[in-house]
Length: 455
Ligand SMILES: [Fe+2]
Image 1 (cartoon, rainbow, N blue to C red):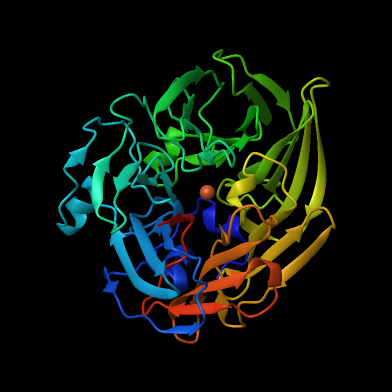
Image 2 (image 1 turned 120 degrees about the vertical axis):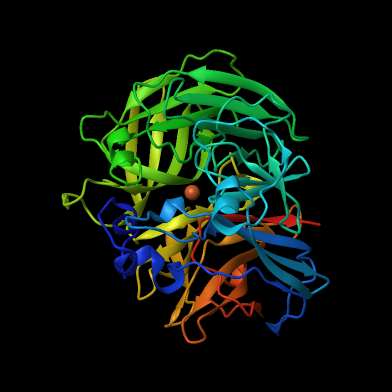
């Protein structure tokens, strides 16, 4: 098993039996479950009322050179209410591709728009404006219900042109949702804003020199930051059966700043040192400057045989100065990590705390991390020697309290039982044992992202 995330996502020729993203807890499951009786160790906080939704790839019949990012989407839902774990269920998103492979009927509702490239919705799942959306890297999202039935492709009643990123940002104070979509063909980038109630209000086409893999972005109270980084679309890779993006030294890395209030397509671009970032932790305004904390890799998705890069990631702080046209970089932590999250209340605003998942270890992922970025300290929540954590999702305990007043919800793989468990951790007593463990009676393959939907 690879110990670093970037070796999992580089293009390389692999047979199914040798592919690390089809082994261990990366391997897909072949069953859809609905369990209403779940064993709980400890005590589930009564103010955790809602459903943890988790997304990830669960490929049906993957072939040679299968890439982790390309598997058919499967959602997992754990419903908590009145101190009890009421249910666990998992469902594939009912795409046309899934129907062709399994015979499970494709969703017939929703948008009938056919985009040239349509992902399966396997990256993230969010609730916004009363809707639940399963989000792909490229293509339209799929609207779901809380029971994980697929309603169909969603395009804001025909108003959304092109793709929607898997990483929209919901402003922690206004509830507005800011997002973008990127494409393999011009216009390579579009920016969008939706109201808190879920109406698409603004869309702007933005020029880029090439189609790049733009997985996420930064949003502050007043501005957004696009990351034009050197992982570039290459049609020849598709013809070879590989993931269609690869590192390209010749592509200049840049950050692009756009005012949220602007209707113009004028973006201020600032060159930066070559690097790759899947995920910011959070971004915020500091006067005219922008603070953007990100999980940075020196290189990512290098060509087969190219090992000319530093393994692993680090948490860094970019201070972007639009007036000077500069970006300064400070390393906050050199622990190899991914899936950074903050309390949703501070999304787009200054944060003190950040949470993430440590990468590496026998299963590919390991412990959970809490950073106090004011004190400069790091705490580790150990998940167990033969266990592996999942993305820590912060759920606020109640309104108006400290930034870390709440719980981290993480789906943990237990290597002893080869089954998964939901661990609920008190964010203010982070290194203690979980306050509750919900045994799911099923294995949840390593996936990407999720969110807690209250109610
Ligand atoms: Fe992501």
